[in-house]
Structure formats: structure tokens, C-alpha cells
Image 1 (cartoon, each protein chain N blue to C red):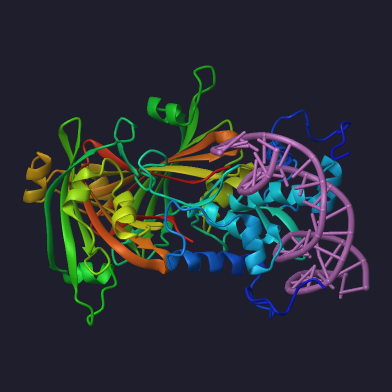
Image 2 (tube, each protein chain N blue to C red; image 1 turned 135 degrees about the horizontal axis):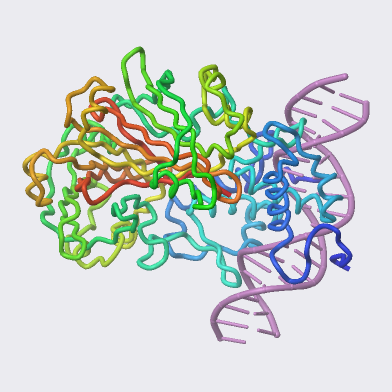
Length: 253
Length: 253
DNA sequence: CAGTGGTCTAGACCACCGA
DNA sequence: CGGTGGTCTAGACCACTGA
């Protein structure tokens, strides 16, 4: 009598482990918007009852999502959907550092925000199908550090998903843009993929960064994904290579 | 009677959780060389007995080390110290991709291997103290993909740690150099830190890569660490930016 | 104080491995 | 077949939170 067969919750017929199914179910609830960023999930006991498994099994499922920064546990309070908050873990995905080794926290100035037809490349990166209206919001920003230009940034966002986005919200955002995506559009970025290229600065880039044409720049392309691997943002940033580099870490205790 | 006070194994006096202590203890055994790369650890029951905790607690500790790629579990066989094997997970730390999106698996040609005084930079990166003999093995390799030069690589290794290293072993290695470090010198790399710079190719680099002087190159610096954050390798690679880029991923289910 | 997640135990059965 | 890790249960106490 180890398992019950009349579960309304989890499948038992020899498939994946229960805790994996729990994880999957929770992920589905998140994708469906049942629990939105910042909100509290039911307690572990309640989830155990709902899914008809032991608390341990719920914990195992939640643990995987906590490790992925999708949920956060707060002892004594509850389990919550992670936010790209202004304070905590801000710049979670930022890998660009000053060449003196310090992490940078640039200021953002919106240079342009317009709706336009997606370029072929952008449509491809964002997985926009021909059938869809292939329009995107195109945001161009200048990033500065202590007043000096550090980077020029172009962002493409599918208009279909970001219909509620306003330039006002972007301008008002003090920190992470992903917090804006969450708050304004209910879109939760949970994974990013970055490609880093070394190039010589084209004329327009050089002008924006106030460096000479042809000097080395880092080009950082990013595709950001939400649940179920749906791409939501395509971003290109250029950095003056004389001042900045890209840093990663892998492995470790 | 939840815990015993006469443990020979773990500390109970209100400090870290037992499973963290287990993790720490295992890590210490690894650093001490009690279990070497590829070897099998005692079974979970045996460890539970040795550390005087429940199997669950052992599992929790081991799980963290498995997540860090330091141990591997094989169902039905046992738990083993992870190896930088020739087949599985080879190029665990490699983030360089062809610009067409394919991961590269270059061939390695040793151009030079000599013992020399560490430069100031290298001594710094490798944490060599003034009191120590600051000598390093300096390995220079050419990496090629289908015969075409892809990268020039310089590696600095403290001679004190790598006294058993031979150029023969390096030349004979088909795959990952870290497997050589393990097999020949008993040194286990568990973490790497990389810094990626965009630069214009200097004359010697350009010549080695058969590109024109001043064209954009990626410079990838790496510091590799073993247990307890001891740096063991300082590596610099240059790639033709027209053919290669650097790729990372973060987050995700 | 009650309720939450955090840690831990004892014990069960399962899936896989190799002799 | 016995031994390994993989999953799961039921239940306990602890540490933290906020009313």
C-alpha cells in the first residue's frame, strides 16, 4: 500500500518519479499564471495534500526549482515565486566587468523606443513564426558609468507578449529591466543564453561609445527565455573593450 | 534521543547542519587524497556508520557534491570521485564555439614546454608567494580545427604541484588536459574562472593564427582551481574572432 | 503563540548492476 | 542473487517569522 491509484494529482503508471512530476506540475502552474512573480505558493503540506504525495516529495520537487532560481524559500514565511527584484540578486545575469575587476552597475538612458517589423535575424532568435504578426518593440539605450558611455544596447521584444509595456515604465525602472517585464507584462525571464563576439567598432557604435572607429569592442548578444523555453527578449550590447570584459565562473564547491 | 553526543564524527554543538558537515568532511577527505579521482567512495551506509548519522543525511551531503560535479553517483554501482574523463563530459569547461554555432573540438600541438620563472602576473594569478620558488611550467600549444589554426594557448603550472608532469604525457593526451593533471599529478580541477577580452591581434598572435595583424581576436584567460580554492593553472588563449565566439548559459529549468 | 520551512531519523520498496 | 544508489513515506523536532 505504498501508493494510491486514484490520484487526482500525479501519474503513477511507471513514468517519471513523483517529485519530477511535482516539479513539472508546479512549472505548469507558473506558466499558466496561477502563481505570479512575488506571490506565495501554498504551503508544502497543502501541496502534498493537493498532489497526494508526502511532504518530502513536495520538498524534493520544490528544491529543484529553488536551485534554478525559479522559486525562493523563506524560512518561517513560505515559498514564493522568484522576482527580478530591485535589491536582491540584481544583475543576476550580468557578466560584464570593468577591466580593473569591478562589476559595473550602469545607468540607463532610453534613446529610442518604437514598434517596428522584426528583422529576419530577430524573428529567428525570438522564434516568431511567419503566421504571426512579426512586430517587435525596439528599445535602444545608452548605458553609462559615472557619466561616461559604457555600452550601447538594442533590445527586441515581441509586441504580442509585451503589449502592456510603456516607455514610461522603462524610464522609471531604477534597476533590472526584467523586473519591469514581470511587473508590467507578467513575463518572467528564467534563463538567458549569451554569445560574446570580438569585433572592430563600426562607425555608429564608435560614435556612441566615443571611441575611434575600428577599435576593439565586445559584442554581447543575449536571448532571454521564459517558462517552457519560450524566447522573449533579444538583446545586443556593445562595450568598449579597453574598459570592459566578460567574466564567467563554472564549477566549485 | 535524536542525536548522540559521543560522536567520533560530526560536531553537534549547535553549529552547521549535519549534512553540511558531512559535505565538508568528504571534501576534506578528497583534498587529503583519501579518495582519488575515479575511485569509489564507501557506500552510503558505511559513511552513515562512520559519521554516525542517518543515510538520508549522508545522501544530502553527497547530493551537493554531485551537483557540483565533484562526485558522481552510479545506480547499482556506487559513488565515485568525478574524473575529467576522455569520453563523458569532455570539454566540461569549454565555452568557445564556432560562429556557425557548432562546438569545437580542436587538436592540440605542443609548441614548447619549459620550466621558467613565473612572471609577476602569473605568480599573482597562481597565488605563488614570494617565499616559494616561483617557477612554473610554461606550455605553449597550437590548437587546430581540421588542420586550420584556431587558437594559440599558453599555460602556466606551478612546478611544485606538477613535478611529475611530462611533455610526453601531454603529447599523448587525446582529450582534456585536466585528465592528465589528474592521472599524472593527482590534481583535480573543480572550478574555473574565465575572463574574456576583445583585442586587436598583436603581430606574433596574428602570425600564429594566420590572420592579419590588428584584426579582432578573443582573448580568453582562465584560472583553474582545485579543492579549497587553490589555483593550479593559469591559461591564456587567443581565438580568431572572425571564426569563433564565446557562449554561456545561465538559469533554466 | 501558531504556522512556516529546515533538518533529521528509521525504515520501506524500487531499479540497476555485476557475479 | 546480493549490493548499490533512487525514491518515498510518516513522523519528529528545530529555527524562524509575524501577529
